[in-house]
Picture 1 (spheres, rainbow, N blue to C red):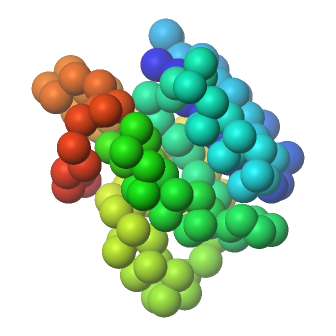
Picture 2: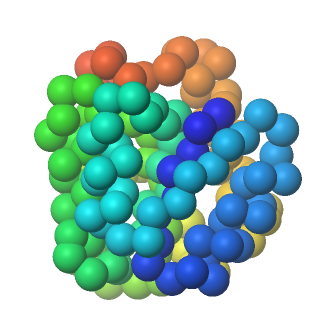
Length: 140
């Protein structure tokens, strides 16, 4: 499974990377901000099965990246786990409006990350990869 970790905090990226890389068949790539994330996501030679996406980053923030993913014909069905320390209802509501169905409240812990990863693995086993398929509602 190819996973993109997007977070402007290097400690948060490292924690996610260590948890995910301990899993079998996982390959992680990191992006330190929205611009770097979008460059990776928009590159046709790089494909990801899952994105762990921080919401609160310098422009473009995670909500903007999520909107770009959902607006992209190729990426719109990409699975995304939103990682956030915010409890602001407006921000969470906006993420849900943009199609976010999976959330991790920071700080990320191994059990939380592994639980989300297992749910995504089960979805992939049931539905297959989503890239190029019409966007649908993701089960939580």
